Length: 94
Image 1 (cartoon, rainbow, N blue to C red):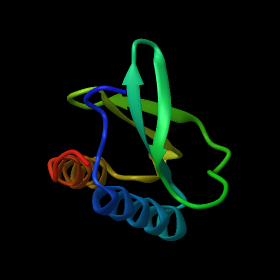
Image 2 (cartoon, rainbow, N blue to C red; image 1 turned 135 degrees about the vertical axis):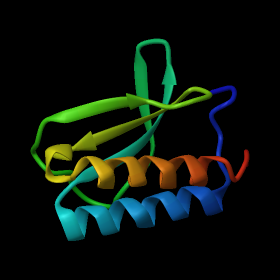
Image 3 (tube, helix red, strand yellow; image 1 turned 180 degrees about the vertical axis):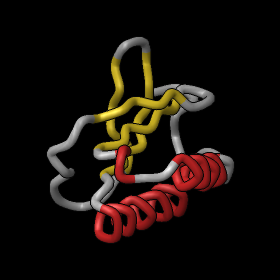
């Protein structure tokens, strides 16, 4: 998918963040490549995601974030999480 590749280090960093968020807060998170209406998972936690409502958040440059159980996060926590994800994506392409 053009424009939606990330380095292996960025993928590992995101996956670790997602696993910690799932373990500590019960919130699932997947990084997705967005092409048209299709959101394809690129990175996330190992194993199952929680059975909770999902929220899709479009990011820049063909990226999206899918959060499961996001209501468990305060608004400030959610904003901080988005900044972390944007920082991971700014590392650059693979």
